[in-house]
Every structure is written in C-alpha cells, then in structure tokens.
Image: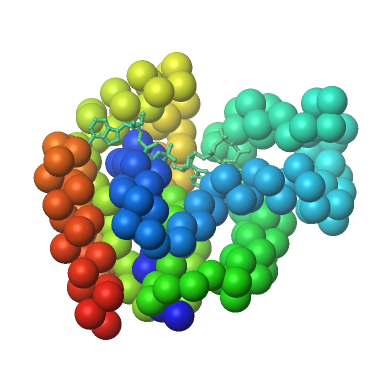
Length: 194
Ligand SMILES: CC(C)(COP(=O)(O)OP(=O)(O)OC[C@H]1O[C@@H](n2cnc3c(N)ncnc32)[C@H](O)[C@@H]1O)[C@@H](O)C(=O)NCCC(=O)NCCS
Ligand SMILES: Nc1ncnc2c1ncn2[C@@H]1O[C@H](COP(=O)(O)OP(=O)(O)OP(=O)(O)O)[C@@H](O)[C@H]1O
C-alpha cells in the first residue's frame, strides 16, 4: 500500500486538507494527534517524558501540553530530546496502523515530515502552503495563540521554499473550494498509480 505524506507549516491547513482526503475514503493518520495519544497512554513514553520534564509534565494523569510547548519551542536541544522520545514511538505505531488499512494508499500527515526525514518512508509527498500572515491569523483565531508563540514554532520548522524543492505536489490552500478541487486531482493521480 502506498503512503502519501502530507505536510506544511503551522496553520497551512494540513488537517483541513487531510479531512478532504478522508471524505474521499482515504485512510488518514494524523501524527500530531497520535503522538499526543501515545504520550498519554504509552508507559515507556510517559516515563521518559517525566524524567525529561519532571512530574509537572502530567496534570491529573494527562500530558501538560502548555508546559511542554512553553519549554521546547524556545529550546532546540530540549525539543530534539522530546522528538527523540516521541518520533520512534509514532513511527512504530504508524506501521502497525497501516497494516490494518485497506485501499490504494493512506495519508501520513505530519508537520515536520521533511525536517525529520519521515518523507523518505512515503511514496509521494504533498506540501500545503499559505501566505505567512494568513497562517498566523488562522492559528490566532483557532486557539488564541500569540504571534510570539506561533513564531517560536515556525522557527523550528523549515521555510516553505526549502520544503517545496522536496515535494512531489504543492497545494496552495487559500480558497477552500479550489483546495477541494486540487485534492480531487491529486487523489485521482494517486489512484492512477502516481
Ligand atoms: C509540545 C507539544 C506537547 C505541544 O502540543 P500542542 O497540542 O500545543 O501542539 P500540536 O502537537 O498539536 O502541534 C501543533 C503544531 O505545532 C508544531 N509542532 C509540533 N511539534 C513540533 C516539532 N517537534 N517541531 C516543530 N514544530 C512542531 C506543528 O506546526 C504542529 O502542527 C507537542 O507539539 C509535542 O509533543 N511536540 C513534540 C513531538 C512531535 O514532534 N509531535 C508531532 C508529530 S510526531
Ligand atoms: N482555506 C482556508 N480558508 C479559511 N480557513 C482555513 C482554510 N484552511 C484552513 N483554515 C482554518 O485555519 C485553521 C488552521 O487549519 P488546520 O488546523 O487545518 O492547519 P494545520 O496546518 O493542520 O495546523 P497545525 O500546524 O496547527 O496543526 C483552522 O481553524 C482551519 O479551519
């Protein structure tokens, strides 16, 4: 079964696009979400996170996302340590998930697909783009993050120009109807063996 990697910077619209593929019947794996589930449920992962961040990493048994975000996105070394705990667990979990899917291809959605080499495991890669100010405005409206918090995450991601060189498909997500049309085209190409 083929894998279409789906990526894009914060606020580009990865999840929105992933959901359009899902509506077309494509199985979708959202790495951000699965990572957080594993950080809550996998005892080994929990133990490593607690030893890295202390007991405050969990609040009433649930991952303290705010605390971790405030620490890691301003400290590259700490982020790398967290990545090194979470990414292998997600990679393993994805392989197991893929085994039980049916269809021509599945989608693996991840924010740092190129940065962390995950794209090598994908047959094709799709990058979602949007203008910088549009991305910032979307995230501020979605979850009340500040410009500074969003910028801190962006600083840990490659610029679009660098990622664009490595992508098989690039989708500019501005107008939703247009995005949906592009999704259909890419879906058809994947079904035709792209
Ligand atoms: C620090 C955490 C707990 C904050 O959780 P929160 O719910 O606020 O954010 P969420 O995980 O949904 O990510 C939202 C966006 O932040 C950016 N982001 C998240 N992780 C990273 C990272 N490791 N490097 C760069 N940007 C990142 C992406 O644009 C992502 O789409 C979480 O982001 C995390 O554990 N990140 C490290 C592990 C990781 O890489 N997870 C993502 C995929 S495997
Ligand atoms: N074309 C669009 N027009 C208007 N709003 C959009 C468009 N695409 C996405 N959005 C909105 O922008 C916000 C961010 O989109 P989405 O969550 O899909 O991005 P993301 O790339 O997955 O974000 P993150 O990097 O934080 O995981 C959401 O509230 C979504 O509804």
